[in-house]
Amino acid sequence: MDRLTEEKIQRFEEFIDRRLKPDLVKAISERDKVFEQQKVLYPFVTPSDLRKSLENLEKNSVTSLRSMVNLGSEVYAQAEVPDTRHIFVDVGLGFHVELTWSEALNIIPAREEKLAKQIEEYTRLIAQIKAQIKMVSLLSSRLYVVYLELV
Image (cartoon, rainbow, N blue to C red; front, side, top):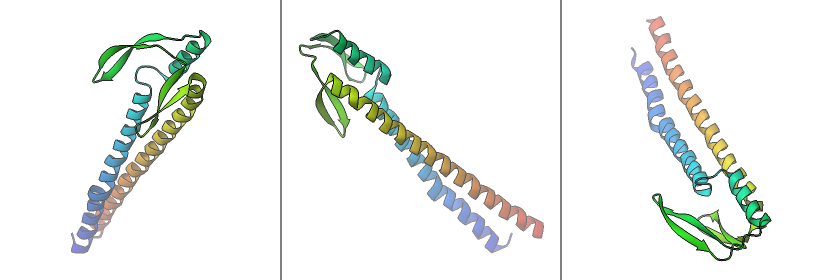
């Protein structure tokens, strides 16, 4: 194989290994973080279940309740909530806002939509990077085949 063709093939392979594959790993990692945020937002229930629970509390005029609270690492403690008219909602970046039930119900769809859009964007980016890797690999192999045909 002549030196010029060999260098071009090597540059294509380096581009895949040093640029595209790390970008792919980063994009997958970022998408996984968004999935984790989704799990934190709705650890054991679907968003519609959370919405139904809030609607039931409001409909039945529940003023106090007892619940199990996840302290982390699947360790739970029993909690008693003496006044359920207001709840604390995680709005991101470690901030919690005290809201009424109806205010919380209004925030849930916006939060769901934001997370879904982020997941969709990262999934699209991952597909693009995979396509780029495939295209550069095909280009590299074509270059090699063309060289072999010329020899």
